[in-house]
Amino acid sequence: MGTFSKSLASIGGFIASDAATINFLQHNSRTLIFSASMAPSAAASVLAALEIMKAEPERIEHLWKLTHYTIDHLHEAGFDLGTTQTPIIPLMIRDNTKTFKLTKQLLDEGIFVNPVLSPAVSNDSTLIRFSLMATHTFEQVDIAIGKIIKVGKSLGII
Image: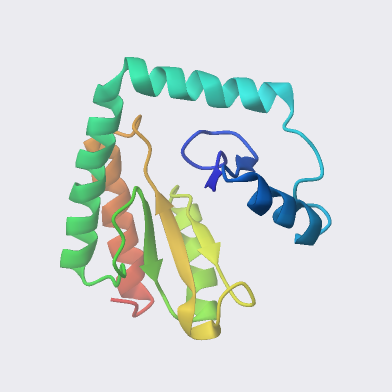
């Protein structure tokens, strides 16, 4: 099972399995799951993204360098990142109100993050997702890290 909505900049996803499993999923999943094919434009964007990844592996290498750099700096600042090892970095906030405030204050600072709040997670599991892309520079990441640390300290998260 995989998604096209994050790393491949599209929508939808896929499941690759044996016929019995696919049949079970088609007949037992929620109504809207597996109800329609992907739009041709979404499929084309996935194919284009895969072609770029294959032709330009330096983009992936750069993304991993950014990821390790960011994780190291956020850990060093005192953020709880769980056991993450991906370019979509969770910052565990564990409080709905602080998660809302952090998201809003970072947006005011020009930094977009995705909050994950209850009821999607329990109140003590709220977090923000800080997502890196291969097109980010180290300078941009340093600016974002600085603002995340500043706001995190002002809210008593770190």
